[in-house]
Image (cartoon, rainbow, N blue to C red; front, side, top):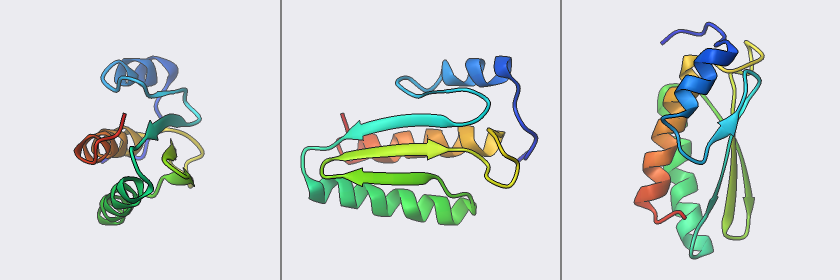
Length: 100
């Protein structure tokens, strides 16, 4: 997977495939709500494992039943294709755990 920084057009095109995600060339963002704290923690654990498997780690912020996610490639200082792929995986995991 490429670690090349994406430009504005590339990020906008990729975000079209990630409903409810927002962002720009600096970072991608999404907030999820869960029915219970336990549901959120289960999703968090699966997201953490997916990130570990990809060796690419988002910022995750838990607030009771709300999970805030931020993805960017820290050592590149912006959004790369790695972030797009991880955002898609996070979206799958969150849906699997009943995120709204």
